[in-house]
Image 1: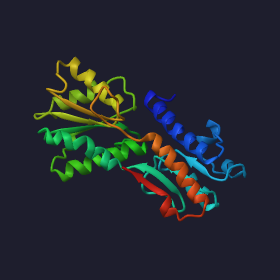
Image 2 (image 1 turned 135 degrees about the vertical axis):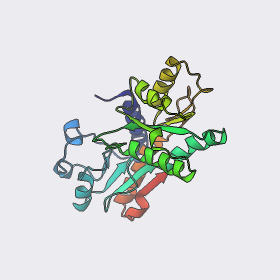
Image 3 (image 1 turned 45 degrees about the vertical axis):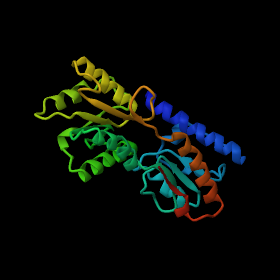
Image 4 (image 1 turned 120 degrees about the vertical axis):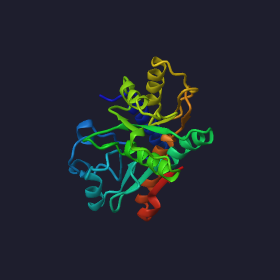
Length: 253
């Protein structure tokens, strides 16, 4: 199943892709889920496509194999560390974190926690590249400001968690609990606001909460998901035109 946050992300991304492809006169082929989620590169090398846009996790080996076989490939919402020959478009997650955290510091907060995205295999952020990079952005910012405390980092199992009460309880049990929390997305932030109010906390007087995605009902950092899609098409067209791969790797502000 796809949670609501993932569905909204995918819809905004696809909208950006479709609009730019239409503008440039390119046809789109949407592969079946069994192919998209598989592990073999062969189905993409049947000669039906000139280039490929992919949304995959960092450990997926197919982009490197496809590029090595001569198929132009661009990864959407990708890590800045890309396989040889592969283009990519991503958001600068360090800047996302700083955009959320700087106003909290300016407001006087010095104990700022992070409620990170889904974890897997026991690693914070796990195999979800966006969750991992967003957490890395928080850790880099907190370290830079002398404010990093390992106990201030917790993770959730879904981008749309039913509850984050346990994570909040862990923080409230600390001798010096956080006064503000940077959440990896707005759904997590909304869940935290509910959990805080159930504990009798006033938001934002007792606990300030900032999310990511641009929800109008929250303090939130908007992310240009549609632009990731449109710029990915642009990067792929440039690869098809023979431009250097380095020029087809874009980090959006």
